[in-house]
Length: 184
Image (cartoon, rainbow, N blue to C red; front, side, top):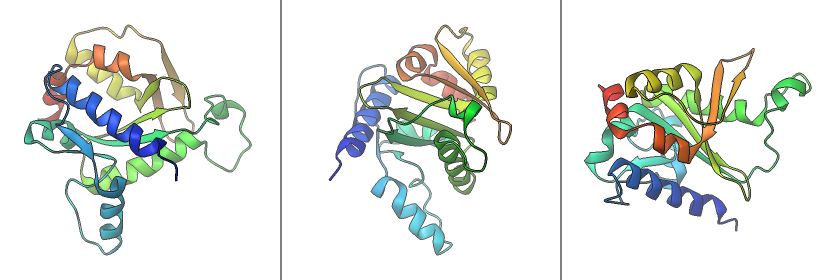
């Protein structure tokens, strides 16, 4: 059994909690039931499950604004991720990142969240965040802090424009207050 995924999910939930509470608590966010499987199963029966979509839920109402704003998907492993696939992939099949994004967007709409966010980490690498470029700009504008990180921008002809940056840079750059202002 591969334990990388669940361990990664627990670790990211703790990191999100510490960031959200200014290092005071590590228990505000946790994994959804079956990494969203419960919501997916119930959705097939046309039954909604409000806070079970995506991979991250809140365990304390303090975290509700983040989850009301973002559907968060977590991906671990996938050593074959390459942004160059957007340039030189053979036509027909979406890149892995694009597959993730389309699935997240489908769930986001069903869950009635404002934005999708994918946090992923390749083996022996740093965790990264993937989000729409327009959202990155909005976070920069709302937070009043200029982006000061290495950012990879991808323009996908079939979907949209993405930014990818390190999760630790996201934590430094975006404040929970900025996210709360988006939740309103």
